[in-house]
View (cartoon, rainbow, N blue to C red):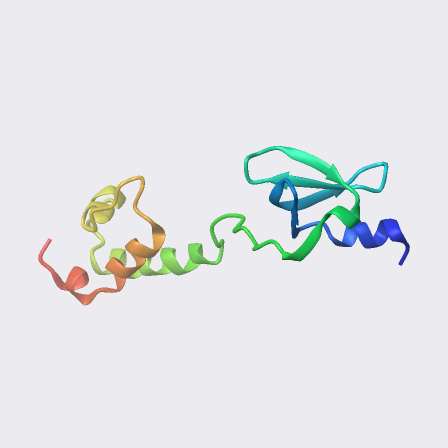
Length: 119
């Protein structure tokens, strides 16, 4: 591994410098590490100016797509038990709004009190 490849391998690591703590996000044309600081600014540093700590914590990239078939299966089970309901009515039974998290709806669907309560 050459020096440039080594520097590229540090992308994603946390680093400290005299400017504070930040995350290494790139290597510039001078073989300096580009660091994004928590205040939002970027600075370029040669390797010897930085204390490398460890990889930055992973940031979730979005919702897990595997939740969809699980949630739809639970909705289908309830809907088959109450086929005269329209979808909007069914979701209304669970106090669902546009900002209800899927895991909350899933808990409500799995709660026997919701399944067996009078409509």
